[in-house]
Image (cartoon, rainbow, N blue to C red; front, side):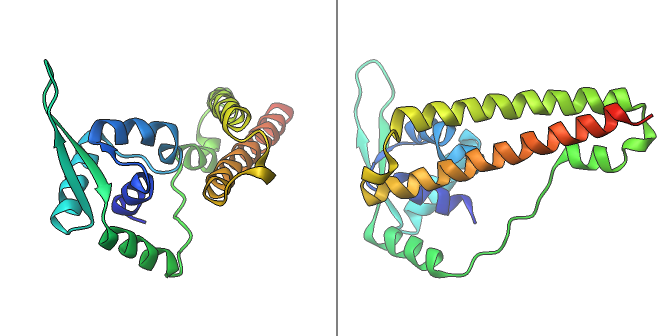
Length: 179
């Protein structure tokens, strides 16, 4: 997947400025696809040049003008074509797993501390996901179809965090028990 796909998917049905898009990334797509402001603005320009997005300049008082971007028909078709292609599993890149793999090099307390830190981070992320679930998806069965797809991505995040927490607990227990 490319950043272009994440931007187009985020802008579907909800035109917004680059700044607002970045904010939306932080609270939705950003949980599984990160991008900096610079990356987003560069990609917005490329997508507009390719005719996949259009923009309208909105004049503001006492603030710089802003551009509101929206997906064009060509952009929606591009996204549909990409979605119809078989996808590949994303490569896993995780510093913690490399550290654990070579963990015998350092005192186990170092890795236990690292594991506990990651455990806390995953607990925090799970709490955020649970808050989103309660606030936006209290009754998944009654959701409109578009929201069901968003709910499914949230559920994947919840399952991901639960799996990480189970693994952290297992790793901490094993390393705490062994001499």
